[in-house]
Every structure is written in C-alpha cells, then in structure tokens.
Image (cartoon, rainbow, N blue to C red; front, side):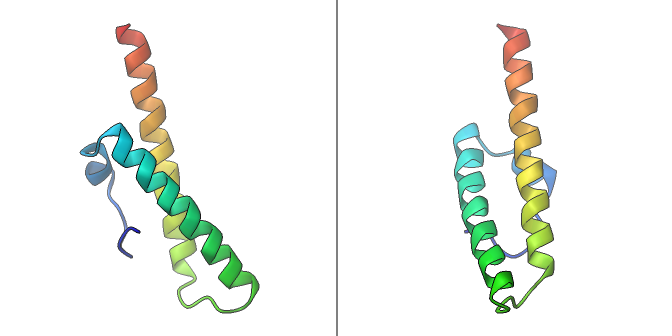
Length: 74
C-alpha cells in the first residue's frame, strides 16, 4: 500500500502505466477498507479517506491524459 502521505502529481507522472494501475488497485482496496472502518466506527484517521479519494482521482486523470495523447499520436 502507499504511504500515508499526500501523493504529488509529479510523483505520479514519473510512474509507468502499469505502476499507476497497481497503485489504483491498492488505493481502491484501501478506500473500501476505510469505508468499512468508518461504518463500524473504527476509523483512526478520517482525513485519509479524502487523501485516498483525491489520489485515485489524480491517477484516473493521468490515465485519461495518457490515453488521449496516445490516441492523437496514432
């Protein structure tokens, strides 16, 4: 899983498509676990939900940008 710090877009841009997909899978799993903890009142760091959600959005945005630029080149 990713560290509990905020991931910058520069760090994400340096990763390959496969690394981004793996990170996305890990983050979605973490998001599920955080939602489960929130539902059972066992959540230690509520701000982590927001960080994970935003990092997922950053990764999806990057994937969309890369797909568009790959489509224009072809």
